[in-house]
Length: 604
Image (cartoon, helix red, strand yellow):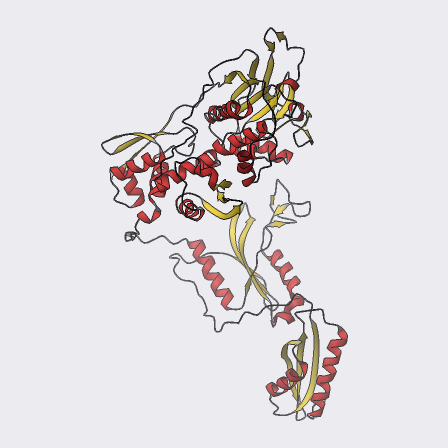
């Protein structure tokens, strides 16, 4: 989330420390900061709010409260303390909630507003965090959301549909706001001027039973605010986070509002959001506040959690005092009662992440600083850990086979035949779970044979440790296969004590060498040499003429006859920069042949 330094300063009596210091404070006590960007005279921090704190910290107020506790600077101007009166009711608006997915809906009716450009300070605040200014009413709803974390929406009351069930009253029209599930196939043109086809699993806001907004996601064009707007209905509501997330994902329409509802915010915030909007109406937008409708079927109960000083020290391995713990709760603004080392904490309604003692312990340690927890060695283990025989056997077999030159592979557990049929088939070709490792190993062996020369292997040897389903059982097996041996498959097991498994030490280690992505070319050359000729000398002669494009030379055949020895070498040519041509390989081989003949060797 983008957080403005100048915006944060407004929560305190004096400017906060530098953005760099704020970044360090947040990073070491609560949230990482991805970076700081200078925008005009402002510094904007990119704060990575963790999912468990999205319900209270996706706002400037939430971050300011964190900094207040960390830096021990009083939060002098908390918008939650400036409660405006929203108790005045109005009979001109009704609200009906037809689904438990809406926990609270507050509608405020304001007449005679003056829609126009926002003041410079408001534009600057919003633009600093990447928000485009629209008009003073819409900007005010966005400001309140980024300030307190509660999304708001404003409807043009004059554009709200008037169905047959609506009536004219002496004081004006009666607006029937509703929250219901969308009708299957219902269509809404949203404020982005795109048409969205809704499904029966999505929440909508209605007026006269006609959808005017996608609940928690985006408002609709039917009641959009513009310069002709005179009367407005302000929405401050609470919608189910899972429902909002599914709707936003299905419509590919994720918004700043939906990203907050997705976290599961407290319904108590709805009142704080409406109170914040009233300040704008009084001082920036104008108009007459006609009243409010607050439908809150099941109010959020007070939240409490308790912890003892002993519990804190037991979990953290510290020696904190009751005064230390009390100091943290005071810094956080948590109400509490303490008796004989037991703290009964009244959790703020927006802190939905605090429910048990361990949550309070976490609050203590992160505010005090993790450096307050000193490292303590673990106590000596009094028992001998039990060996997992299957795991031990697998590791021992793996070490043994790798030492013998085998390579481990992992093949698919699905097969074209077997005893156990897969209910959710991956495809129609392999609908069974494998009953043996050998078919998969055989396939891998066949696919790797063509690359043997390039890899410099005289023989491909493979093994796999995996599960098969046979004779009604699920068994872990060890399978091996090579070009020269018989395939082998055995149940994986160690001896009774699981302390011995025959292994062979690795005699030498191969140096890692990068491989080329371009294809290679293989050429063979055989020659007669005088008896007693050192093959290594001949190899060096070939290597000298072959040049850098020859990446490997192997002696693969030798025999003697009538006082002469035949030596056969295999050469592999490959480039790291391009695909070689047959012509290039042939030219090099011709050069090698000329050189060998000059040394008195006969090319076979």
